[in-house]
Image 1 (cartoon, rainbow, N blue to C red):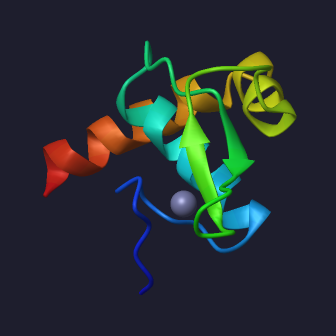
Image 2 (tube, rainbow, N blue to C red):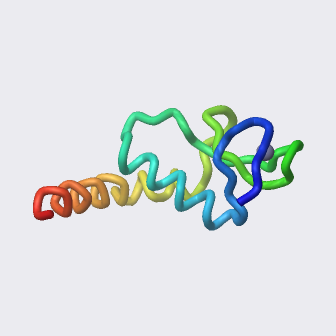
Length: 80
Ligand SMILES: [Zn+2]
């Protein structure tokens, strides 16, 4: 895995970055992380809390997917 001087987590594809975004919101529903951007220093993607909210995240929120996933996460934890 490559390193970035910014020390942020690196995502190699948009898909990976979007999945990570949604995962973060499932875990921390009031997270301010909202989008991803291409880094000038490493050329890969990082998540950010500034700028426009990513469409995939917006859609997941509107569809109630975040709540659904966090509930199933809750149950998985309870059962294990
Ligand atoms: Zn970087």
